[in-house]
Length: 209
Image (cartoon, rainbow, N blue to C red):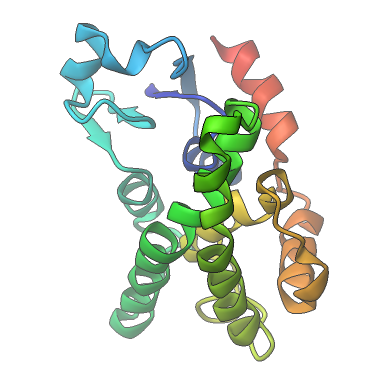
């Protein structure tokens, strides 16, 4: 059985859980507490020398880290990763956008506020994430004004990658009220019968440990 090491309040971990749920892939979830330094324990570093979650452990004992690489691997041969080379390149395009132009602002602001409780010594850093996060949301809004999803007409791992932190952007101080197309896209994803919310994922992950 597949095993995943992570924290389901982390968007990068939740996106893996969400795809596994939609694929109905049996797996075991092992909670890793980043605030207790568990990602820097020797045993964890053997799985990911970069000391970050999530980490996917395959049935044969191999390990794969970086959330979007894990999504790409798990989605191979499924409708969540298009077979068409152009569309597959677009998936990578949006996943790269998520990691370099979206996550460093929206996810980091959320981490400072939700995980750390917005300490005064990090308030300036928190505020500095505003412009970059709003720019990323603007790029998404522009695309979604003309498209139901990020690649093609159905949900792909490009959407899952971006959904994970966008749908909880308010926890990092981002107001989505001015982004109606983004809110519509979030609603479409959440309305799918196979969707698993973050709170549900946390509860499910706790039950699997």
